[in-house]
Each structure stands twice: as structure tokens, then as C-alpha cells.
Image 1 (cartoon, rainbow, N blue to C red):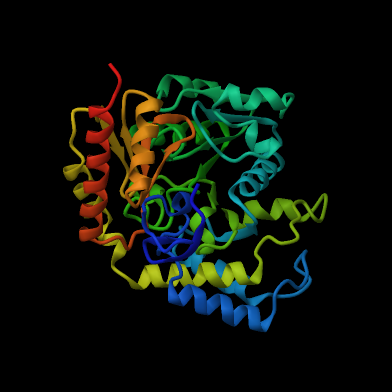
Image 2 (image 1 turned 120 degrees about the vertical axis):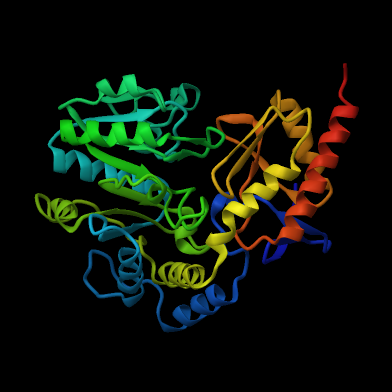
Amino acid sequence: MLEIATAKGVYLYSQDGKKYLDLISGISVSYLGHAHPRVVDAVKKQAGQHLHLMVYGEYIQSPQVRYARLLAEHLPEKLSCVYFVNSGAEAAEGAMKLAKKAAGRTEIVYFDRAYHGSTQGALSLIGSRKLRQPFLPLLPDVREIRFNETTDLSSVTQKTACVFIEPVQGEAGVRTASRDFLKALRNRCDETGALLVFDEAQTAFGRTGKLFAFEQHAIVPDILLLAKGLGGGMPLGAFIASKELMAVLSSNPALGHITTFGGHPVCCAAGMAALTALLESGWMKKVKLKEALFRKLLVHPAIKQIRSAGLLLAVEFDSFAVCRKIIDRCIKNGVVTDWFLFAENCLRIAPPLIITEAQIKEACRVIMEAIDFVMQNRKI
């Protein structure tokens, strides 16, 4: 097991000084790489001003306000009100409460192989019976339907409070919802009065080549979930909706959702510094070219297929045993990657957006060598 001493840019450094190229970004968290100077400076500056003050909106905390405003400026008007929390799972919890209260309904629909977090509420919407089973009973009145299967949308009815979906299922091994399916889902939600919730914990902040993945489909959700990269490397999540929709949490009871540390000033300062740097750079424009380079270089008979959505790629092999050995070999040779929660036979690639062409070529060289090594030494 690696013990990391320092990290900078796209590299991790172990205690003995060995350098590792990071292809997973802490699971799509560090989209600017590690120790970005603007993020580090923002953390230091805010820490010197104040840390935690008070919850429940008793005090105005300018890092929260400024970051919420910046996010709203780059989102549709329908998504203008930001509620900061601590993580993606808590964002899912807040969105479930918001949807149920706003709709006056209890049923929640989700998809097979979905992942929205590991708290008991979010776990109720996980597309894995194996992971849910040890913790039953969980939330009642939830319904699982099939991803990208338009015929299943008839299960969304006037009893449905909301539908949770990832526009790209990350832990399923990068499975992208089709535009036609998302359009049909949006229409079905509009017909039934159900709210549409997009979980973009893994796909936001340029990962797919757009700031938010939903921008590529001309579909706007009613509630947007953000986490992972939201804090620029610090823990932060958010659920975002219209001001009118979010207002239902302000009465009956007055504190419809409460969080002590959600929107921590240092986390918001770090997240805002990262997003500002991203917006001022040209990195998002290069995502598709970098995706294409990975796909061009990773060609091998042992690779069954590659699924990708920008700089989020799943390289599929015929078994977990093979995939695990390839991953271990990559790490031994200085490239860090792993597999997916619901796709153990797939190697995960989600590097910082700042990865260069030369670094992609080096990463692919190491991956290809690992594939050759494992296949040549595979027991017949």
C-alpha cells in the first residue's frame, strides 16, 4: 500500500521519493491537479481570516456567498440557489428531502448500477442489492428502473416525487445516458410533476469537456448535485435548485435542512479558487482531444472495449482478476489507477484536466506494458 508524502500537479510522491502519475484524481476530485498554487493560496488566506463561525445563516460568510454567486452565474436561471453541504451523499440526502417536501409525494425512482453515496438514504438509491442488503431496512417507497431503457419510464407516475440519475454513470464503468433517453425522461417528469435530479458528482467541472455534463444534452434538471471537485480538493458538496423550489425548506419547519460544516469557509474559498482558475484556462477545450489520445493509444487484443465521456474512461477487460493484476503492475511502474465499484473488470482513467500529451503517452505506455506483462504471464 502506498504512503503518499507529497503531491503536486499530476504526480504523487511516496515517502521514499518515488513519483507516481495520478490517473484518478482522488476519484475526479483534483481536476486541477494537486497543490494548485491558487487553491493553496486561497486556503491559506481564508484560514488566516476565519474558519468555522456559525450555522443556520446567522452570519453572512462571504466565501459561501461569493462561491454560490459564481456557480449561479454559470448555471441556467432554473439552478440559481445553492445549498452547500459536506459531501455528495449529503447533497443526495438534501435533494431527497427537498423533492419530497416540494412534490408532496414520497416515491423516489433511481436506476440500476446507480451510485449516489453511502449514507442510509443515499444507499437506498444504490443500484446494488449486494451493498444494500447488510443494512436493510432502508428507505421505503423507492423504485429501481433500467438505465437507458425508455420503456421503463412508465414507472415514473403521479406518485413519484423525483427521479435521480447520473448523466454518466461513473461507478457502473462510464455508461452514458443517451440524449433521446434524457429527453424522454425530462418529458416524463414534466408530464407527471416529478422532479428531475442530476447527480454530477463525478462529471462536473470540465470532466466531460463542458463545465457540467447536462450542457451537452440541452436538458436542465430541477435539482443538480455537486461534490468531489466542488471543493477544489477540500470536502464540499451542494444541491442546487431554483430559489422558489429551495424556499420550501425554509418553513414548516423553519430549518428544513441543517448542516454544521456544510459550506465551510475554507472549503468554499478553495473551490472558488479552483473554479475561477478553470474558467480562466483553456483546459476544458482540450478534454476531447486528450480523450481521443487515450483511446488512440490504448489498443490491445485484451481490451474488450473503452467507454468514455471526456477524461473519464473505463478500459474493460474480461475479468476482475486480469484488471486487478494490470492495475497492480501499473502502480509498480509509477502510474496510479484503480477499478470501478460496479465494474470491477474495468480500469479507471480520470486524470487531472491539466495532464499533458506527453504525460498521457507515458501513462498509456505503462498501461500497455502492464497489459502485455499480465497477458504473457497469465496461467492457461
